[in-house]
Amino acid sequence: MKMDIIVPKAGLTMTEATVTTWLVAEGDKVNKNDTVAELMTEKLTVEVEAPESGVIGSILKQEGEEVVVGERLATLLTTPSEREPNENTVISSAEKVLKDPLNETALPSYDAVVIGGGPGGYVAAIRIAQLGGRVVLIERNELGGVCLNEGCIPTKTLLKGAELTKLHSLSSEYGVYYPEPSIDFSKLLQKKEAVIQQLQNGVRHLLKKSKVTVINGVGEVVSPNKVNVTKSNGERERITTKNIILATGSEANIPNIPGLRDAHPLTSKEALSITELPESIAIIGAGAIGCEFAGIYAPLGVKVVLIESENQILPGADHDVAQFLKKSLTKDNVDIHTSSKVKEIKVENGEKTLYMEHKDHYQEIVVKEILVATGRKARIESLGEIGLEVVNGGVKVDEHLRTNIPSIYAIGDVTGKENLAHVASAQGMVAAENCMGYAKEIKYDSVPRCIYTSPEIASVGLTEKEAAAKNIDYQIGKYHFNGNGRAITNGKAEGFIKVLRDKKYNQILGIHIVGHNASELISEGVLAINLEATPEEIAATIHPHPTLSEGLLEASLASMGKGIHV
Image (cartoon, rainbow, N blue to C red; front, side, top):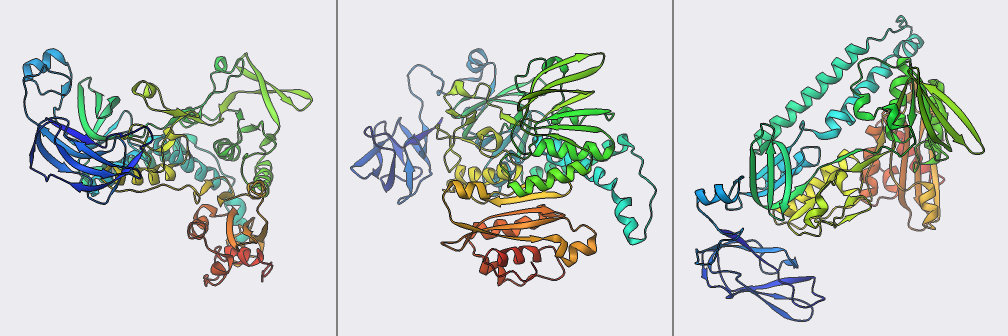
């Protein structure tokens, strides 16, 4: 059978070493306890011995490479012995049926098993395949994960429908008249499902093209190199693998409010599945999810109450941006309550009453439905049983996305780092390349955050509050779209671009945009922060006219007190 030769731990303080010499080559025969390689630490030379007699299969780490304790150096094809069978011993098919009801592959047949087919998992699987690895992807539901099926994509489809209800008001300014819109919610839901199906088919095609093995079922990690699979048809199988990538995602977090569960609240998942619009709805939580659903329901004629326990909607966002969105949602008749906590909920005669505490007084709100949008929690059930370290509700990973078990990686929402699809995909790429022998790292300094309300919000880097907390001497530059030619011709001149500049190093610290197409505009800002650009470098870049992107040039100039059109 095949087994691993790993970096031994020599001494209490040893954590890493350098491969200095291989004393064997692939295909060489070795005896148990033969020295096969030498490693060098800061203090001593470490000899690596063959754990069993056999033949050297693949040498995975080359001379000069850095390695960590427990990391795989090479594979060893062992020879049969007279010892008693154990879990690593090749046994006959008949013995296997008696000892293990699962259909187990004796040798590691994959370079990686990826559990979870969301934007992190399927990207990781494709990248491993691109690098020549054999990979299997296990998904219990639909490919694309929460993002494609229950989050990003369906909500953006509904938000587009809500936006179109305002088209007649805008078009009349251009002499083009439409009647007041009527809402066919069932048709909008059909469009949502069609979009999901189209993108699901796209993911399937990409996986098939990359020759990724896809299993519809539930994967359970039973050891650092084994995964049990219960397929959707009931069949069970055990897969052996060199690496495992956990991409199990997250689920809605339901707060412990008395009476809430009896009220059968909606989460974002159920909210995307309802077939009729409620007359009224209370949304608990005014983060990105809560604000987006407020932006869906209100234009479609639903009476919306938005409740947030913090002192502003979008807690953690730039204050100016949050205040601008609050005004916009208020124009859409969203009733917003900040610094407010729901203390109890009662259900009577088909109505749901929320007893809300606001500073020094209570208020009762009566609605037909309740949507909980108080964040998400990692799916980490049973992961602790195999020894994975869990911190702050997520699987702990290092900058390589490796867990405390060297052969197991974790990506996406299950890590508790950033619950964003594009972060999961980036993590998937890093984990995949590390599974295939690279040494890639993930950094979170330039992660863009987008909220697809009307108007959109996008940001990257530090807010003013965060910069102040770091004692950074900063200066802001602000450019309003009501002075931008393209925004005015579009008839959508609301919003602004805000740039934070470090006075000492003249480096861009953060960029915050609220306005039409903000989610598309932010990418230039992400690149600028990733490259540690200065405002002068953006200002020296010629931007096309008339475009919304000129606003970033102007805000950058303004952050240095050199604004032209401000």
